[in-house]
Length: 265
Image (cartoon, rainbow, N blue to C red):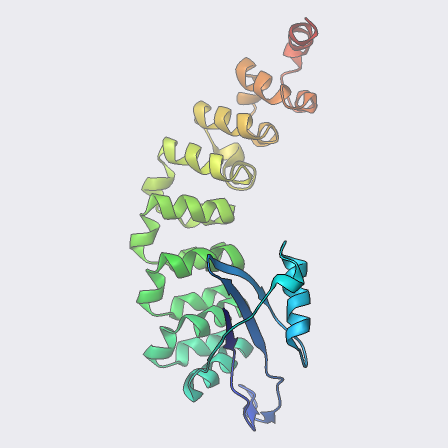
């Protein structure tokens, strides 16, 4: 089956937020292609299109030959005029979400468009969306770590959700509640999910040897950003050098001969 989602119905006038002057805007479509097993891909056609065009583009994005594709049904979903108005408004200026009525601030499509414009617009979204992991997860991944700052306290304390968010965006870490951030095992788990975390967030501020060692074992580049005391630690030096001898440029040169001897044997 094929589900065609219409972003906004064609209207005679489109109003600019600040000047309120009528404008025209091309109608846009997202074609969400579903198979019996679930979603396959999404295509955004431009101008006119045909089933032959659709078969060709779906085939190019999948391993399915075009002549084996048979689109046997179409489902067209049309949004309400009010939803269409706010979809347009928030796409142009995310701050308009703060002025929207409650039902619009709870509308996932409108809010997502606002986040594409400015992730901080999530501050004005309805609490139901802020507590919806299915909405927040992809929004963080696609729109940035700032989205996490405004998710519900429940999600901020859900370590499974938090680690998933960190795996997509290392910057999420700075918005995690402090008591969770201070937990050593959490930091190690977070580094395992996203090794960029140590280099961009923890680095020279990390004082726990186990965390540093875990980071270096995950990615030797963490060695560059660790405290000098850890760059003189034999085990940590060897963990970094085992991945790249470039690590010796940043510390542990006193262990170079021993390391070379061990790996020459």
